[in-house]
Image (cartoon, rainbow over all chains, first blue to last red; front, side, top):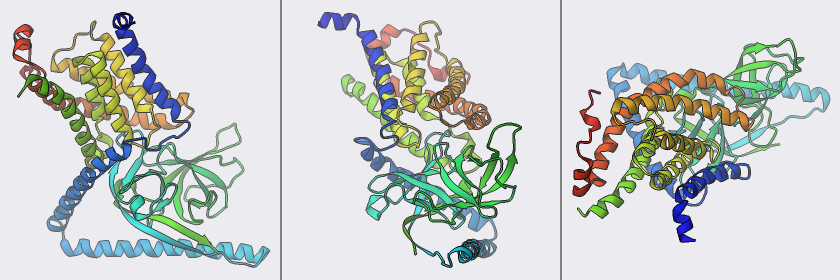
Amino acid sequence: MIQYLRQYRIYITLFVLVLIPILALDTTTRSPREFRFADRWIVGLTSPLQTAISWILDRGVDVAQNYVFLLNVKRENTALLEENRRLLASIVSLSEEQLENRRLRKLLKFQEEFQISQIAARVIGKDASSEFRSIRINRGEAAGVRKDMAVVTSDGVVGRVFRTSERTADVVTILDLLSATDVISKRSRARGIVEGMTDELCQLKFALRTDDLEPGDLLITSGLGGIFPRGVPVGVVSQVRRPPYGITQEVEVRPNVDFSKLEEVLVITSFAST
Amino acid sequence: MNASVLRWLNPLVLIASAVLGLAIQTTVFTSYPLLYLQPDLVLIFTIWMALRRDWVEGGLLVLIFSHLQEVHSGGLRGIFLVLNMSVFLALRGSSKLLVMRSLVQLVTATLFVSILWRFALLALLAMLGLGDQHWRHTLTLVLPSAVMEGAVSVWVYRLLERLDRRTLVTGEEEDSLGSTESLEDDAL
């Protein structure tokens, strides 16, 4: 037996080396991206490194920007931009409520409100591969973050939490090719699913040819699935193509959130519709 | 230090280097324009394992590196294991035919492997029925990524060779190797 193993050790080694990845890929259908045994330890080891490096880079960039460029102008600009974003978010929220209010008053005469509780978090790292687009934030199970919680900023939807550890959480962004977010058009109420496509664009899938969609239309979350509250901005339609055949149209969407400058996010821990 | 201790230190240092490399890769290359120039350090490590280690040690280390990469990525579990192991097996198998000793040959191999890796990922995603529009992203990034990995690999290979010389080669082995060229002797 031992002699047999020794004689064919190369082939046995090859077989094992091929088998392990295939088994790993096969188990992906059952628990796609959960942490396995000891993965949490690995994350616990690397996340402080990522946090430290991010902190150093951010401080360095801050120093360069604050002391090389005009100090007061930047401060004022930052404050004004923040206020602008806050005001825009409230306008979208209020106008969405107003439209819905009118519609439902016409039919049933009632209103919908939502209340959100959230946790602020900082982005400490991005995906290790340029082919996928997930981010790591510095809040985990200890802070109350759980799987499938929505992650947003004042600009709009960032993504959802797909796995957590004690101190960190991984978020699949709407730019990722494995993400899917149910949306409706604010103007025409056309429905579809936003999936990631490139580093800057998403695509709206399952939009019927008969749906009224034009460049410039704002897409917001529909609230289906219970992950995202209804009415949170997702992106703006940038291009619409109707091929000569088929029942759907090809729609490109530019996300509201600027992912290249993403630093802080909000994790929605709960929201209620009354 | 004792030769056997150094020998065992080699894979541990490699794993620690991979962890540090992933931490740097996921934090430094996050903003425009570095976002589009993120090198795949695990792929570079995989190529080195294929050309400088045997089947068992190299294979195990590639599995560990790929697992570390998956822990820091939102990709499907097993996808990096499959791709990196395929690279390892293909390069290891062809290392008898294609002798790659100099740094120029290694960097050239890295460029080609990087391009093939990305197309292999595209094919794998297509087989799994995912990312039907991912080809746009692949075509945009395939050449810049390959160039970036080729550029970074120059330093990574030199560091890895320095590590191997310190921890793998004993006095007896030095005599038996004769005049082995060092990667640092290359014009690159």
